Image 1 (cartoon, rainbow, N blue to C red):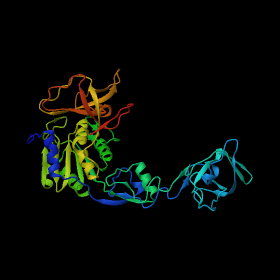
Image 2 (image 1 turned 135 degrees about the vertical axis):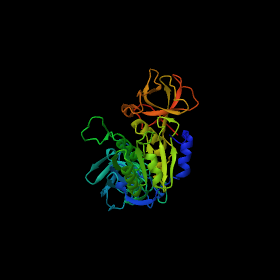
Image 3 (image 1 turned 90 degrees about the horizontal axis):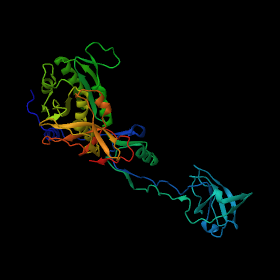
Length: 422
């Protein structure tokens, strides 16, 4: 039997007490490898962006004062001197009464302080007729208008996406320092489990947890290491866990943590190192058998075998640890306010997490409808649920129409849905 069921907050506190999750270190990688990694340094601009005054239109660079008298029926006549193209240094110096043809993005020649758009001019041989006046700096992007030299453009701890990597490239950086990615071993246990792709024999089911949990590790910023499927054999499981401890920074197992004769995971964990098991059962539904251990500084999370339970507990307890290890904020998640579609009764004395899917009613209110699974192992619950909300241990029920806070697995496709950040 379980030693003592901890309530959910106690389990969180014990994990935080024994395992001070923090980044594993810093490495320098190329920009093409940096997506979804976390900056381990402040980024300060070493140059102005753009590094020179540039034209924002196709047209003619000139001195703005030369156009002040221009009118639609009385154009100003200027002399054309050469052309300035993108990617080259201007070959001419502009004096009063002169203009040079210029392309969008090309540097502004010395002596010019504005650009008149091509469609507001007429070229006749070597003469330019300007039909509208422009002001100083019109159609000119000044050096440093986007980013100024010395400006801190990205701060330590920033998650790098396509926009941030674009900024790094604009600054001329080919490499960037980021926090190391934790390697997370993932394995399933059970004599009934078969690897997808193989023939399914009578009494067998395909392995779900290794794949769903590995993907959840990826989504959290970790690198999953597939360890395979193991029968409920103490010797084989101990060898697998020893190998996983040697090559990875964290282990996630599923199955083998209940109270049956073949649930041997807790016995093995206590033999692998100190302090061993720190959580052995949590007063939640689902997820009661959840076990956590710390083996010589490395966390091990042994989750229930039921796919829905395993993935839910991952989001509640494991994901925050991985986020901290990669340098991301672990105290977050997308949440939305919704109204319960029906009255819901929790499990007596246990924190109950209710899987729900979201929809809109006739009044355009967001409705949280429980995903009917019947059992925590129902597979369709994984695909149907958008998120979950919780019912406290001392709460008798959630009334139909009562407002609840739904924690999202991902951002659902609902128009005008504005998530709240925890």
